[in-house]
Length: 135
Image (cartoon, rainbow, N blue to C red):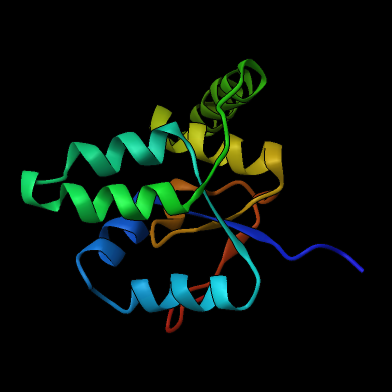
């Protein structure tokens, strides 16, 4: 029997969860109660904190500290650079932050939760479909 998937919420999912929007906190809670792990990496943490207002510090710290940490290694950095280069050659411009998140997900076998599918076109990437979103 295979292990339960570990989910890597993209920054937009974490921000919505922190702000009580779109049922994202409930989604993350349901995943945890179902036995799944929730992950983060330096990119998602940096992006969350870059938009945080001072009065949101305690709540943000609590959420981030509850997530399992996955390091961005040299191998992941190399993979992210290759992904960005390869998609760019196909005319698809991806941000370095998004390719780092994608490479982290691929390297550790994480399932990415995002609303920004166009930022993650890699067919080998495991994506979690959000309720009401077209597959």
